[in-house]
Image (cartoon, rainbow, N blue to C red; front, side):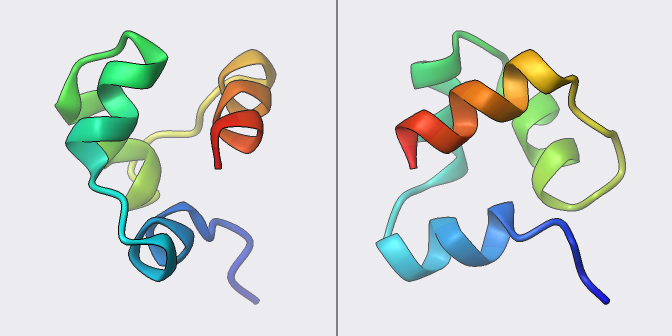
Length: 53
């Protein structure tokens, strides 16, 4: 079961990872790692992502 749907939601909404990185005040590579499930974000970051999306 896929739990990380950040990449799918971004695609569905037509939002780029670069835009999300700017909204979170993080570098693109960190958001890309979250979206590609290479790095697990902390709960605070997940909350921010959820509020933005």
